[in-house]
Structure formats: C-alpha cells, structure tokens
Length: 161
Image (cartoon, rainbow, N blue to C red; front, side, top):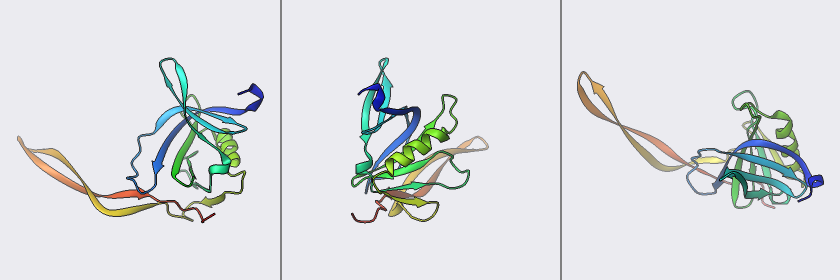
C-alpha cells in the first residue's frame, strides 16, 4: 500500500459478529487504517500490527449509527455475512469523532442504507436463557444465587440487494 492510499489512521475498538450467533463481544483494541480500498482492522502483537479484516465499502449493505450520548463514536457496518461494531478512539481513549465521520462516510460510499438511532433492530432474543451462578454470603453462610438472562443473536437489518 502506498502512503497516498491512506486516508486516515486511528486507534479503534471493534467487534465482529456472525449472524445467527450469540451477540456477545469483548472489544478488540487495535488500529484502523482507512485506505482507498477499505478499512483495515488490525491488532498489535509481537511488536507488529497484523491485519485481521479489511472492510470494503462495496461489501457494506447498511450501517447503523447511535444518536445521543450513550456511546459516542460507536457505529455498526453490516455485510452479507457479518456485522462490525466500530468505535474509533484517540490515544487517550475518547471518541475520535473526525475519524468516525471519515470511516462512516467511506463505508456508506457505495450506497449503503443508513439507519440512525432506533430506526432498525439488529439484535433479537433467541428464546434461550444463559445461567450464571454466584455466591452471596448471608451472615457467614455462602448461598448460591442463580441468575437467568436472555441470549441474543445478531441479525442482518439490511434491505435485500
């Protein structure tokens, strides 16, 4: 890649979800390189950055961006097979709004449908429950406590192309 191909660089927190799979995520903190041919998502290991995904605007069918102050900088990009949660950040960990706008505009550059706020749902309950057990100490006696919560999965909200 030539330097002239690079449109911007940012630290980025990201998750990748397969449709129909459980939608849990522990964000990967890496480097996002916006180039003319795509957004390169990479990780830093063994003193080098390694490319993990390249997300091209031609692969993106739709995007979703949050409104309000819940998670500034967060947005999703949806391809035919995966969804990508993307949060460009500064070295101090704050939202990198300038790079978010550049990446967002690039990923929508081939006519992807843009969803905003609560306009679309892309997570649904599977009907299954996840069980978590913990111990509560009552006086000096440990008492097991079981908590159930619904399991969610990612779905593709994009219109059929």
